[in-house]
Length: 136
Image 1 (tube, one colour):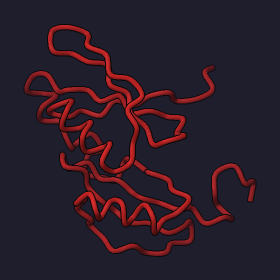
Image 2 (cartoon, rainbow, N blue to C red):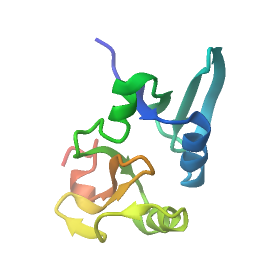
Image 3 (cartoon, rainbow, N blue to C red):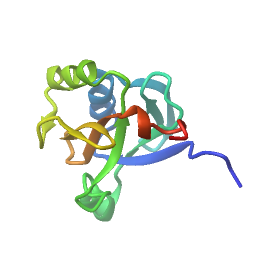
Image 4 (tube, one colour):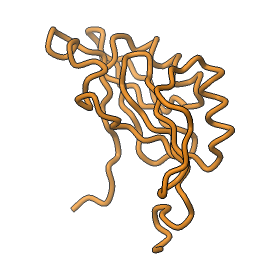
């Protein structure tokens, strides 16, 4: 069985707008290849991140209707940070829409935000006792 999830697709209306947004909030573009017929292979990730997002330009009514709804209205993307204050300020400066104020939960410090297409994200700094891989 494979050892990790390498990519996940995120439906967007336009490659360049999505790439611009994600680069403004600190992601890096790892690959941007023209595939013909208006398709591109665009991989982005936070610096040092292992799992990448593949930006997928929606084609057709069904995909277009799913933009911002891939999580069915739930937070479904989780952006982990080692410095909550720094990254919260970066998101604020980029004009991100926050749905909540930052709060402390037993699992860590978290705030819910939306990308320009309506996808709901958590920015989260895990508490040390529940951080992935600590064994605690």
